[in-house]
Image 1 (cartoon, rainbow, N blue to C red):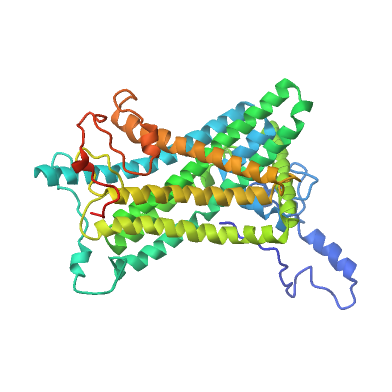
Image 2: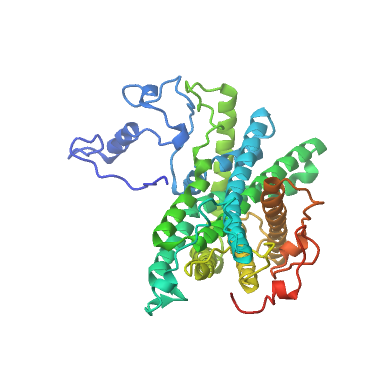
Length: 493
């Protein structure tokens, strides 16, 4: 993560900033300004070959501008979000309009996000296959040698090993539970950068949508339609980013719930962290990111335009935040801490539910659609509600940030609160559709198993229902009666 230093360093003995005994303060300030060239964002910094001997920019230096790109505290939000390729593409869509470059980068963004989500879905699929084969072995006495030549890799039964020791928390040995707390907290903290970048893009999206709404009747149909399409595409990329973050927490909790032992737990958590890093290594939108570093003048001009527009928009939002009432500011200040704590608790709870089985030497998965029936319907019931709780926390945190930074003068009225509530419900509905149609059905069923909606129904409302729901005669491999599914209000196991 990029470090920010806004303080002055102490001048040493040979520094040009050091004041002579009788030198006026004005001369020191003038020399200091000449000695310190303007600090610019990372992607705009000039290498030493682009500077004259005195440190001043050459006339042919890339991205030469009269404007001072200084890092002010008010620009910290932009500097933090600008690390993400996805955020920069969102600014391209909102402020550059449509062009071949915009379409290319928007397509790359959508494909990269879908690839990340599919990678997470494949991790969940591997856990499901192992659990399904294990149930097959228990049902038919077949070890699944055709799928796992060496047999299913059952986890170690640490609960049996520590059965004579009372050092347990929530049914788990301390050597499992305490590392689980560390891993959970670290995983959530390491996603804060991704969450901040996502929310920065969302507040820009809300600001652009507000401006479009205010200017709608003054625009021609063509201009209004073009800006509307830009806002819509940017909203789609935002939905995919939130879906990725939501699903990442879910799959990470699954992985930690299925990890055998503390060492494997730490390794699995470490392996999960790199999935969210791809957007920090994509630079297709920058005008000089090619082999020779030669800038395209048109791309350079477009980049500077969206750079100024997005930076000024975030500056305006930060200024609105500084003027909010005190009680709203307190809610906003507590938001980041509450988000981290609540997300960590939810992920920890899911992982503990899984470890109650894994630490006992059982292969399990939070699911009830195995052809052998649900062995833990109450576990599935709790798991589904925890997933919805996670979505609620993510969206509430996002809406608080958007509400505090909104430039709408009526945001403290009932109308403003109603708009935030409507935005919350609409985005929640969109994310649920993405979660159960795109992620669970398309990525989890249709693509891996080459099926269609006719041979494998989507069953959207059954998937949305948090209670285990296994209607008869839906699956090709059989139907289930009350004895198979059990009462979802029953006990675990």
